[in-house]
Length: 464
Image 1: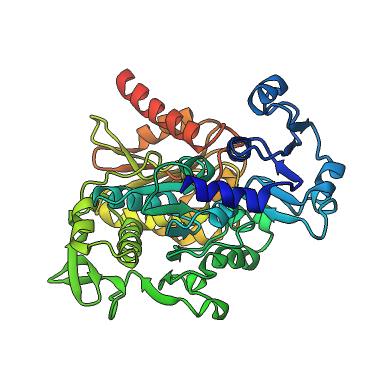
Image 2 (image 1 turned 135 degrees about the vertical axis):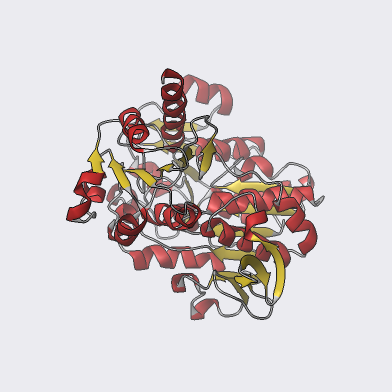
């Protein structure tokens, strides 16, 4: 396998003028891979000091590093441009410099050209990390050698030379899909589609078209019947299609249905398990379970064994994560909800579990140009008290009705939001941090935001 890889790398990359744009986590993994195979390259990053030049020279010997600006001359000379996902290729200084015959790719595209490991590919606005983590967990528990990569886990080029895998599960963002051309996934899915990254993609239609490209050349195309935008377009009709959704399903499709008043996961008319048996609650998580089962079925995994494994999966940090407290309040950390669709899914998925108790929502941050109006009905019907913060918090608060003004507050910090929520909640109520926004106006990332929330909840509990 390693000899075949070396031959393939030499055939495709040797004697090419290669430039890596960006020297973050992805760019570094590309540099390490090329260096291991003795392929020369240059790196260009607009940031002044993303890496120490001394450290770069120590790791990568005589390869070129240019920092502090986009070097149009260097970019123009590239025959292969390996672009990190966070870099917008439409930026004029970059776009104008790229030669017409330049091959613009990302690390996942390079992986697809060099590896024949069967791929299970997942994209969507929300739930990607949960679904791929479940798939990875289930596949390995069934005895397969499953790798996890893409927008999560170890960069794919750091995994390509490991022991041969039976499958690789890829979480793919729209940024990564922009540079993927050769992927032929065993099974691919668009879980859902909602406003996200429109500051880069400009329109929902363009964003959706990028997401749809995951279906190109896949054997099985899995879509969400609840979201028409996920159904493969006519140009991807060659794949075998199957679906999941929140209503009853037919044939080999997956869905939800009630039997004797109890909701079940279903494969066609076959009852798989009750929703109450599942570790992760909410309709949005039920759909995630269905997507995992459908993708695993495409891979030939045993359905009964998958169900047994899913019963032991406890979920991801910062994704509808329950904080253990002794105050009787259900504190939920959903800091990973960085867009409107994620927060809408959390509210609509969790509200039915509250019965007569209150839902207190903490939301706000950097909306990235998103339209918040889809939240209006959920905020009106399900949220008893709304606390907002951050750059776009007031825009979310403005969606509330006038008669709900006394149940809406804006605060300056997450610590203050937790303190206010504590005054409004009693035992049995739920306080949900689900921002519908990115965190970068106040935090380094959504992880830091979630950690601050957890610490605030636990610290204020101890001070009571």
